[in-house]
Amino acid sequence: MTRNSNLVLVSGSDLRESVTGHRTYVLAHALAAKAAGYSPHVFVAAERNRVEETEFGTLHLVASPVRPYWTLMAAAHQPFLARGVARFLFAHPGRHLIHSFGAWSASGLAASRAAGRDGIETVPIASVYTTLDHETDAKLRGVGDQYGVATRIRFRGVQLWTRLVAMPNERWGYRGSRLLLVNHESVGALLRAQCGPAVDIRRLPHAAPAAFDAASTARPRAVPQAISSLHSADAPLIVSVSRHDPRKGVDILLRALAGLTAAGVRFRACLVGSGALLSAHRRLLEQLNLDGAVAITGHVPDVFDYLSHADIFVLPSLQEGGGSVSLQEALQAGIAVVASHCDGIPEDLAPDRDALLVPPGDPGALHAALARLLTDEPLRARLAARARQVYEERFTAASFVAGLSAVYCELGFEPEIHQSKLM
Image 1 (spheres, rainbow, N blue to C red):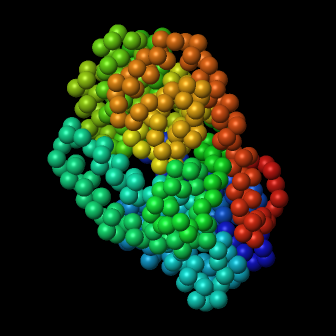
Image 2 (image 1 turned 30 degrees about the horizontal axis):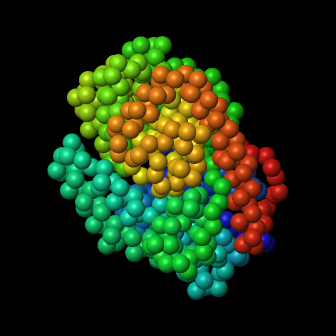
Image 3 (image 1 turned 120 degrees about the horizontal axis):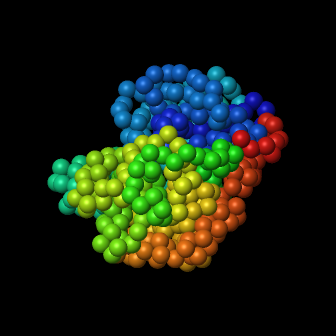
């Protein structure tokens, strides 16, 4: 890295937190930067000021009185988070790279401009996985009548907040960034529609945090109780990992599973993750008489405890923006995949060659694809082998580290230590 410089990563809430048991692309960026020889300083909004050393760099928790710490609230957290980053930059004069994520790019840009007024040179860039309007519109589409009027009103309010407050702030952050990094062309198209053709967009290889800990993810795992308690212990196991969020299509998956039961297709299924609609989906499971064949776990400490026993991984999302961490984890685990044909997913997976892709929001099509895999063991084996090949070809830590390092070096920030060892 250039003399007297720092790599600052600006995110939202603590990278160590997760509702599904896996962590995010932001964490993967920090791990990649550290593996490339940089020393990341990661800034997140929190209840109180604190600095901690972690496996992904120095974590700076910046006190913000705003609750909650969601990305949709980034505009409200911005004055506090930007001030915390700026204080750090003032104490460490030099030339600094500020790499922000999603709507938090506005906080990074605000800190960059504050530093610039005091003569501190910064280069603000951002990684983008979707836009807030794309995500919130999908959530509203996914809230059907089964969730009740109150839930629909709540998500309509979220959409209104997004359009009036969150989106303008997000757009300002993106337009002011030197470079926008995306992992799919579909995200680039969303950015051009929102920010205009003048923004500089670059596609970058990407990987999940699990790619940086291959030994741990590959170790043998005991069968979790949620799986061992399911009926028909010899039936193929379907695993899905996602938030219980309207855009994730969990209700579509449950209806597809009910169709499999009605058709007499043997299976077991375990749905991993937590979220706002967890209780509603557990009620739907009971209404569909899926007790005993399907388990909904809620939050789990480690999703590989479940992926390591799966025969089929399913991602029934209505919208996925810049791809899915859990999908990459399933590819790493070598599991046959059924996923929605939406957003960046068909950029990662060729239909029928790499996975079975189905129209989003169509329980009948999802039912048919799952039935095909459940009843065709050679096809399952072929897609499982291909899943691991796709991971090795596109989603390893090494390719991500190389791509990220190349961007940082192009911007004039060389690593402190040249190294190839991955965590």
